[in-house]
Length: 304
Image (cartoon, rainbow, N blue to C red; front, side, top):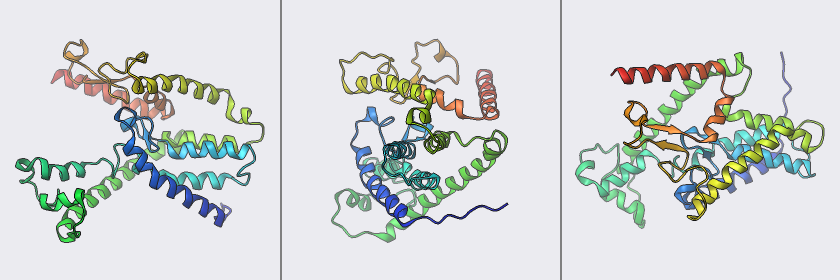
């Protein structure tokens, strides 16, 4: 079985580099400037906190498809959509509020060297360099002490690389269920794949998008606009109860007076519609395993 090789055009390379430069530079700036209540929904990286649904590739594919429909970028084909997705998916970790380098474990270790010396003085240098090395990171105006920083850099690089290898192994194990058995892409990619395929079909824009997608966009706006206004204006009605014992991504923490709080293992519940919707994209075998595992976990917690 052979496949046709299609070289990447120079114009596509230039277009992609421009996109990467714009979002790679301004994306982290935007993420660090938005208020805390907006960080889980309005970054260009991911939404839903640890759900990690990538935003940038899907949004770019959507708008590229719209521009293609109105006569701009008419030459955009399957290669263009795929190349744009692959090129921008790596940016999402840099454009999210809880991703590297904006917020990560090592930043806390650096800060602790200065603000918690009684604790951090017991750490090895690979966790964080000494306080006198950390302070110029904030103030600047000093030469870079590579010798003092090298154990720190190597340790955290190795830890991140180890996580990458681990999750690559997990993804390889799950790949069989997603692609070979149920013939679907991974949940985080299925929306982008569907959008790209729709825009490449024949017909008008309404036919390409389809009624379910249009209804979904309307429902998404109906869900997000009240949340946005609730976080922006204190006087706006709290339609979804987001101001009461709720993290900004939709997790409700149970207070001591709650009946469910008396059950071990029931510290939090999630009421976010995005978290519920993403489960519809997962294979049934994975959902079944997750449900059974959670039931076993809850039973064991009660027994213990």
